[in-house]
Image 1 (cartoon, one colour):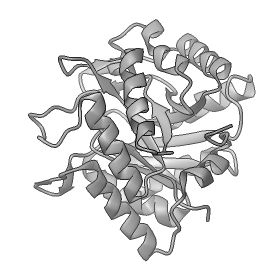
Image 2 (cartoon, helix red, strand yellow; image 1 turned 90 degrees about the vertical axis):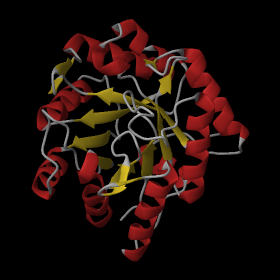
Image 3 (cartoon, one colour; image 1 turned 180 degrees about the horizontal axis):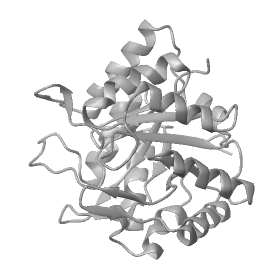
Image 4 (cartoon, one colour; image 1 turned 135 degrees about the horizontal axis):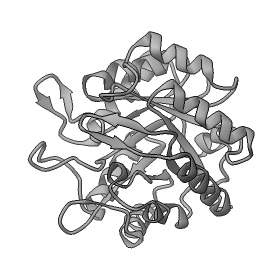
Length: 276
């Protein structure tokens, strides 16, 4: 197996201090969480930013500030910006903002989905435009798939030259309205992607830890963090993102799965070395 790439999603669009007092919201808090997780073994940080009122934002200056703080700490973690735009509540043009800053990775939600009482819209035209914007800026898509149809959408875009191999898939399981967070579902989705494609999985809420463990033993990669789950165990809030990361690292080592360094992860994902 390749060394395990661990991603951390520190805050997301909707997490609030009312839900957990440990939520990192400001650029400095998100940067500090990223560096703490890197010290524990994280390879990729998935970054959302908030405005002064705590609402999800796609402001370039906030993304730029967060990354500058991370790099100032001597941290070579892989930067992965969101393009979700409050689940479709911001104009498509705003969702291109993070890509124009040329992060190494950016999320690419490969289709539309009902989520509780809302609809996360990613039209075919928007996906083509976003993929083209990523190509122009040298950004690798993290292809986020909430169900099997999104895999088909991504493969179609790849066949037409909008996404270049190796394709990097992130299976998002357990979202209301999306694919179930089961071992059978994960195996099915892995079997649908091109052989040799790196893949990762994140489980929402109580599914986080079981799917972390499945990815470790199946040879995939995994994501943890407070965007997906704020609990360390039932009824006990996680006190930090780093606490969730440390558990994944511990399980991987018990399974004798090596942890990827950022440099090793860049090779697996087909990214340039940080200083190139």
